[in-house]
Length: 205
Image 1 (cartoon, rainbow, N blue to C red):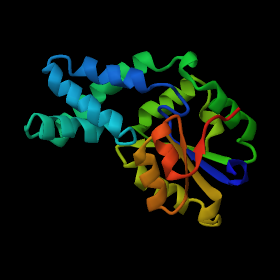
Image 2 (cartoon, rainbow, N blue to C red):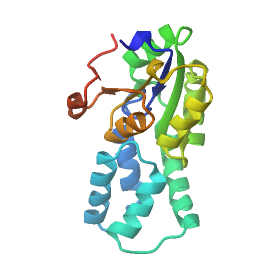
Image 3 (cartoon, one colour):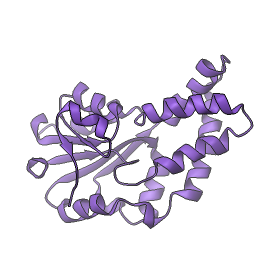
Image 4 (cartoon, rainbow, N blue to C red):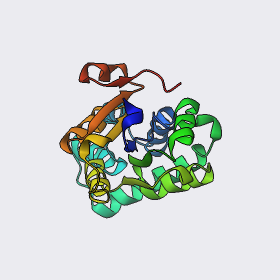
């Protein structure tokens, strides 16, 4: 049972915030000068790998879809453009998932909460501060560091707590992989394809 956990690590997009469509549109907007079929191929990759960072996705777009080389600096520039679009479109209270936010508000004093997301860490902190939900989380982690590594960091900060008392809640296979690689419980949410993996939350109400 999720309420028996001592630490919950939350994915952000599609879990705390219904932001997936906004992020889809962000890639379309930033890459509007490229052929539609190539952008569509990136969207397919992006939607199948929700937990991966935009840095990975932009590199995939240029190297795998367009067969072009791209430098680290160029990847960072594309990611920066994407973040500018996100900050214009995601600081909206109506995008927050009310049932999840209510659960967090009602339980954050009993359960230590973290965010580990594939989204940019600075951007996430800014969004959460702007919407006044940052106070419910011990720390908010994001890219460019991979989610699996951010979970390692959270575990190392809580070595006094056994892994069985941790849970990661997410809506993508990448979230599942980050949890299982670190030997903590995974709870799928907001993605019926994850039901077959075991623990699944239909509602927090």
